[in-house]
Length: 220
Image (cartoon, rainbow, N blue to C red; front, side, top):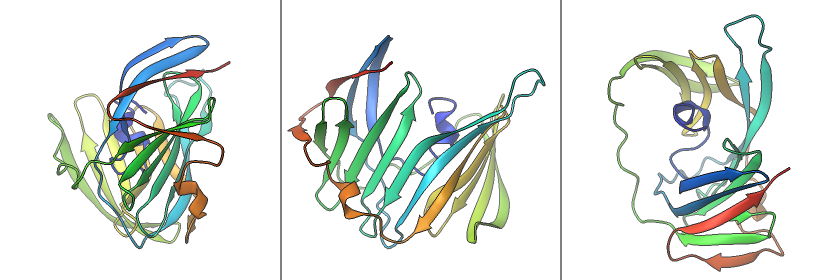
């Protein structure tokens, strides 16, 4: 889910996440510098949970198609968010929690049972703008899994991305790219998720970070 894939594979995300830089992968470890978290639009009164399924259909017949779950998402009626996503630079998962009520964001280090806490920046995120050298076409309204969605097609010089978003839930339900990748939400459940999802797990040490911090994951 990094550029250009980042443009369309975080289908449930709405701008929230920890900034990350200085990624280094030296098997069996990946390290990087995280923080601060980005500001994001708070959506209340529209709780849900879902998984993200990524499909890849190659253009040549010799490469097999593949599908895999790459994300788990939940949001409660107060706008708290939890997202766990497969991390592209290495075979690890990252879990982030955003609590606008407490004004706190957490990045979990599951291997060391640590929750890195940072304050959420105030205010909404900057208004979205049309990417440079891109044109956007509106595709109208459709229904997916009983939910009304609005479609757009964004054309870049070498890539076309089609996105179907729910105005009610403020999440993307389906995104397709001309490079053979698509991403969609599955197992979508309306209703209040477990409140425990929106706080650090029991037994984790909470470390308050005043600035960007380094974190290292081990993988097989």
